[in-house]
Image 1 (cartoon, rainbow, N blue to C red):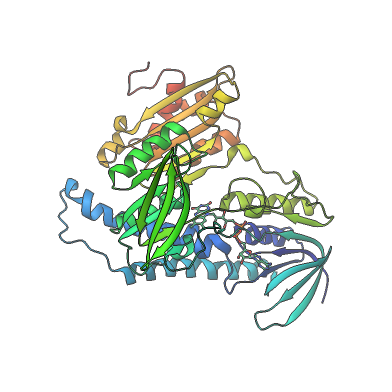
Image 2: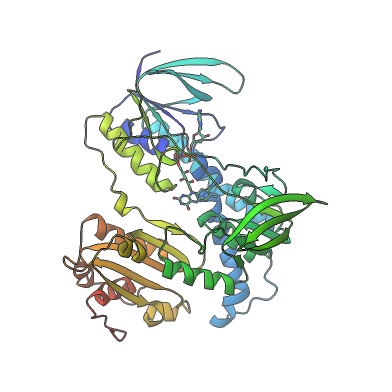
Length: 448
Ligand SMILES: Cc1cc2nc3c(=O)[nH]c(=O)nc-3n(C[C@H](O)[C@H](O)[C@H](O)COP(=O)(O)OP(=O)(O)OC[C@H]3O[C@@H](n4cnc5c(N)ncnc54)[C@H](O)[C@@H]3O)c2cc1C
C-alpha cells in the first residue's frame, strides 16, 4: 500500500472535518474508526441525538404548557416514545451516512478497526474480526475523543447507573432521574426527561450550575429550570451510590449534613486528556492530537477548528484556532450561550470593562413569541470598546450567539454592532440593543 500523508485516528468532528480539509488540500489521507459508524461521539451518542430529543421534548412542553397562551387547544398531548426515538435515530443515520459520503467525495480512505500507533509513521488497524493491517504515513493525528469515566464508588451498569449514552435511549421516562453534575450534558438530558415526565434532581458539587458560563445568566437559567420542575442541590458532593431492589440510593454531603437521594436511574459525567503544544504537536515527532482528547472545552466545533488548523499546518499553511471566539451552549429552554470572557473573569483579571445588558421582555419579537425570558449581555473593553465577551439566555440563544462570535473574531466593538442595522422585529435586535447599552444608549429601555 502507498504511504499516506496523514492518518487520522478517530472519525468524530475533529477527525472527519480534519480529513475533509486534508482531502481539500490534496493530502493523501486516511481515517481509522473502531466503531461501526463514522461521526464519533457527536453524531452517534452526543450532540445530535441529544438535540433531537431536546427538540421533540420541547415541542411536547409547548403543546402542554404554552400552546394555550396562543389560543391553540391541544387536549391530551402525550408522547409516543417509539416514534420519538425513531426520529432521533433517523437524524443520526442521515448525518452519519453523510459523513461516509463526504469521505468518498474528498478521497479519504476509511479503515474500519481499532487503530494503534506502533511507531512514528506506523498505525496498525485491528478489525472487529481480528484481522491486522499496517498503514504507513508521514504524520498521524490522534482524534480519539473522550469517553465517560466512572466514579470509583459508582460503576456504570447500563441500566440504573448510566452515562449520557444510555440516558439518550431510555425506552420510557424513569420515574425519578438523578443527574450528578450540573454541566451542559446533565442539564440538557435532565431537561429532556423532566419534560417527558420524570422527576429530575440535579446534584452539583459547586455552588453554581453551568460552570464556564456567565454566573448571572447561569443563575437565571437555574431559576427557569427550577420553575420547570427540576430540583437542584448545589454544594453537594455525592459520596456513595448503591442499588437497592433495582433503585438507586445515593449518599451525599452538603456542608456538615449527610443527605440521601433515591432514584430509578442515575447519570454521571466526567472525563481526562493528552498534552500538545500550540500547533497540536505531542511530544513525539509526527504525532499530533486534537479535539476532546486534548485540553480545552469539550465541544464538537472546537474539535473541528482544531482538525482544520492541524491539517493546514501539516500542509504548510498557517492553521490557527482563536480560543477567545469559541461559543459554548447549553440547549435547555431557555438556551444559555456564551463566547469570550464572563463578567467574573473580567473582574478576576482586573480588566477595565463596560457591561451592556438588554432583557428580552423589551424585545418586540420576544413579546410576539410569548417568550420573553432571559437577556443579552456584552462585556466590552472600557478604553477600546472591543467586545471581549457576549452571553445570551433565550430560547434561540444558540443562533443569536453567532453574531457576537463573528464580531469578536473580527475584533469588533460594541459600537460596530450597535451601528449595524438589524431587521425588525427580530430577536437579534436585542443583541444590537445590548451592544448599545454598553454606551448607555439602548433605545427601548432606561439606561442606568
Ligand atoms: C450527550 C452529549 C451531548 C453533547 N452535545 C454537544 C453539543 O451540543 N455541542 C457540542 O459542541 N458538543 C457536544 N458534545 C461534545 C461533543 O460530542 C464532543 O466534544 C465531540 O464529539 C468531540 O469530538 P472529537 O472528534 O474530539 O471526538 P469524538 O467525537 O469522541 O470521536 C472520537 C472517535 O474516535 C474513535 N476512536 C477512539 N479510539 C480509537 C482507536 N484507537 N481507533 C480507532 N478509532 C478510535 C471513537 O470511536 C470515536 O468515533 C456532547 C457530548 C455528549 C456526550
